[in-house]
Image (cartoon, rainbow, N blue to C red; front, side, top):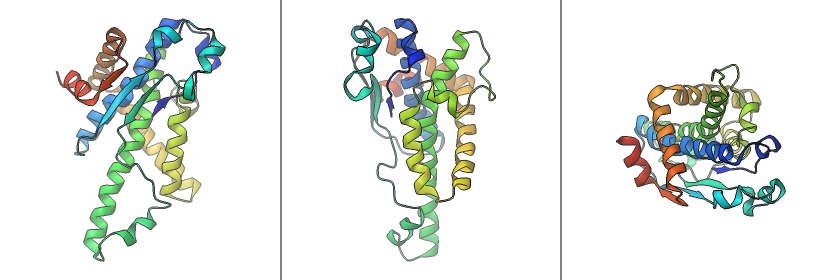
Length: 226
């Protein structure tokens, strides 16, 4: 979950606005991993937010900024419940005990984790989108927030990873689109929830004020829960 290479419109923004967008993007991912997983009764999972030197890099020319190592300036390391995706959901069945109830329970638990990972990937760019709209005095609504919008708000790498998840979910493009729409709706509602948004905003401001290069999950949990 990394904040991908800055787009042209992003480069034209003021350095502080760039830094704020990045903070809300990564705060969205981190709060989602903590609160969304908790709401789905999933176990805590290690993650940390890692930043390059934003103050230093944002002073560079756009071309230099785009050429930063690994083409990103911030990322959430860890946090995924499913690290290795199967070729298909059906491929998981032979790995389970030869018992119908056990297979059913295993696949149900897998899908909960599967859907949580996709939601947590979507929530990062959605949080950045919401921040950008509100900063510009626009209403964050479902008509304005869509997948193309997320691409403009640092979501390319997140959407590429989501596509890998969907490819393992089904070979049917129609089924993939249906699942993505379902999870996009849930992710949108998560970001638009006042309690969740307050947590994202609190963490984003902490990121901006602390100037830390690494923020661990214990720190995020403590901040969000208090």
